[in-house]
Each structure stands twice: as structure tokens, then as C-alpha cells.
Length: 576
Image: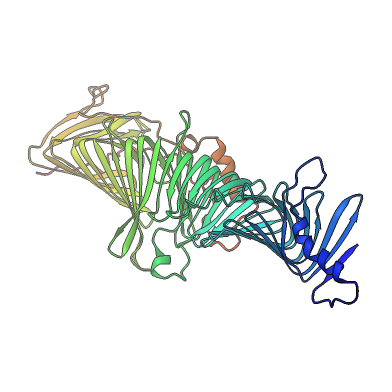
């Protein structure tokens, strides 16, 4: 056994001991008699060195301010054991390893000089100037510049914190891979998944398995998500659900304010593109299943209404006009819509939600329907069809309806089994409490309506045309009819009523879209059921929002009412 004590005095025949100690560093460069060539480790400094030798080989114990070097890798610690024959260095106490751009610190490290691999334990920290990895244990390959961690790791990168029980980080590629549950948190929100990768160079996360993105005003669920932190854009795949709260940018006007919890918009699809900064979303479905839009609104009384719509393409955005921000949803490729007040079909639709300007005002919804196949709306027992239709809903109730181009309205008289018909170039309807109160038609206005006896038998029919016609309704019945210019009409007795008269632009389909038909029975129903029951892992700090059970409830799914027969005791009047 050979010892060297720093500052030890030479006495008597100790000169040979001192000379031997001086030769120790040079001995490191002498090839060892082993079957494999070891990588050389150079001792740069140590306050105390002790050398032992046995059949297992030479062991050097280094104490105090230990500094070692292998090629370009520097190792530092308070103490170390160097097992020369197997090329292993065991470092303990304030260990620091510098290799290229990487700096590894830990309580203890076992370093294999042949493989250039360090096994670190206790308060492990690995930094490359861009990212920092923290873990209780890690294995670092300095050649490949890869660290594998376990026991719970944490990576910090430019304002983001990524956590996972285990994974790897490549400082050469600046890519982290997480094999266990992973979470990414930054100022915009939190992204969690069963597994994933993170590219620090482009700040891109590729997560898969029960992925959830949580933001202050939105939540995104999917089977897999590609998320870009710089732009806050996400590409989501597989059973995607985007859940948004509120209508306006209250958080921008008052950062301490919570999102509006009276309105909730959910978008379901197989793929979805989401832009958190621009506040846009675009959903697509599968060949046999279109994406689904669900809007839940709670009024001042606490009642929650649901609006359901499907179309092959659904795009949502926020439109800022002055101090107000409106929600805009465009549905294209064949849209079907249902809500308690009305149902609709169209080639395409544009839905605009404008929030209330203040607490005394009411929010305004506008729905525009378009398409070569002539869109239709079913409301208050009537079907209205035209080249394009526009309806407004104020404060949760239908306010007006405008039909442009080949406008046609039909209403089934359930007693007589005949269709009341109105036609013209355009129509303007006014509603009160979701009931049609007035209807203006023109130019080229025409009407066919039937009269019934008190016994419910056919009493006759009227055909009337004019430049314009105005109708007044009460309790679902026509109370007044007035015409302007070019008035012509024919009155039929019960025996000469035409069998099936059809006015220009005739269109009638008794099967309006229903809640069940639009919602379907796919995976979206299961998601809504779990949401209504309170899904595990739901955020307790989110505002109380309209529950998804309203979309599943049958309380507001009664059929649209059929028209009551027009009675003889309230005959319509005509004036020019």
C-alpha cells in the first residue's frame, strides 16, 4: 500500500517514497495487462492519494478537491475511488462532470471510463445551456449525450416544466422522451398524456394516450396531440373534444376575471387544429361520422339549453370588433342542426354569437344558412325554405327569421291533413317568446290555406296572391291577413278544393332533424355521460359550467308543434 499526504516532510530514507509518489501520475499512462484496453483517466489534482494493489488490480483513493480528466470530459468531486483495471471511477460529494456543452452534478456518480457512462444518484442535475434536467437518479452517456432518468424527473426549458416518472433527454438532439405519464406546464396551460416526446429546439410536444390540454378558458382531450408552444397551436387526433368557456376575452380586459361560465361550447371530431393565440379551431370527422358541435347556454333563471349540429367541416373562431368579441362557427359540407326552438338543414351555415354589452343587455345569436340545395328551418311548427335563411336569437329566444330567394313556408294542419302554404321572393318573420307573431312576404306573394268546421272537417280553401302579404298570428293561429297591390284570390268550397296544390318553390319534409338523430349513439355520447357524472381528474378550480347532461336529457325534446286548424270564427281579412 502506498500513501501520499499533501505537504508531508521528507525524513531519513523517505526520499524514495516521495519519488514514487511523483511517478504515480505517469503510471496512469502505462498499459495495463488486461484483455481489454481501458480508457485512460488522468488525475489532475487531489489533496490526498492512497494507492492499493492486489489480485483485483490497482485502486487509487483520492481525497479533497479531486479533479480528473478523460479526453475532453472533466470530473470533480470531494473524494473518489479509481479502479484502474476495470476503468471505473466512483465519485462522492459535490460531484460535477463537464462534457462538451453538458454539465452533470449529483451527490454520487459511478463513472465507467470505457463506455464513458456515468450513473448518478442524489439531487441529479444535467444542464446543456438550454434545458435543465432534475432527477433523483440518472444514467448519462457522455458519448451519445443522452441521460436516462428514473424515480421522477423534471425538465425546465424556456418557461416550461416537464415532469414524468422516467424518460430520457438527449442534449445533442435537444429531445426528451417520456415513457411514463408526462405533464408539460407553461404560462398558457398544462398538457398531460400517458407518454410523449418534447423537441426543445422547436418547442414541440408530441404526446399520446389520454392527452389533455388545459387552459384558463378551454380544454382539449384527444388520443394524441402535437403541440407547438411558440404559437400555442395544437394538432389533435383521435376522439378529439375541445371544450371552451365563455364568449368574450374577459381575461384580456381584466386578467383577474374568470371566463364566462354561463356558456359552454364543445367541439367533437377525429382531427382538430387549434390555435390558442388566434382562438381558432377546425374539426374534421370520419367518412361515416361528421364532427359534432354542442353549445350549452344557461339563462338568468338557471335553465340550460343545448344546440347540436353536425357537418363534415366545422371551423370556429373569435372575431374582434371594437371592444366586443364574437364567436363565429362555420359548418360546411351538409349541416344538420337541432335545438329546443328550431331545427335546420343546409349545405353550409354560419353561426355568430355576440355577447351582451353589459349586464342589462342580452346576448345575440345569428344563424345564416346557405346552399344550392336550399336550406330549411323548422320553427314553431312550420318549415321555411329558401335560397338562404337568416335567424336571430336574442336572450335565448327566437327573435326574427329572414328568407331570401324562392322563399316558401309550409305548415301541416294536423286536423285536415293538409299543408298551409306561403310563397314569395322573400319572407320576414317576427317572433315573441319563440312563437311566430307576424310574417311579411313579397314580392310575388302567394298563399294557400284551408278552413275547417268546428267538427274538424274541411270547410274550404283560399288562394290569394299580391305584391306583398302580411300575416298576424296568435296562439299558433292565423288571425289577420292583409295584402298590398295586385291582389287576386280564389275561394273554394269543400267539394272543389284542389287535391294537392303546390306554390312556387314548394318544399316540405315532415322529418325535421331531432336531437337523437344529430347526437347519434357514438363515442361522443359516452364522453358526455362521463362529463355529466363528473369525470375523474376534472379540475375542481374551474368555474361551475352548464352540464353536458342537458344534451342527453329528453326534457326539451318534444316534437315541434303542429298547426291548429284555422277556425271560422276568426276569418282572415283582406285589404288593398
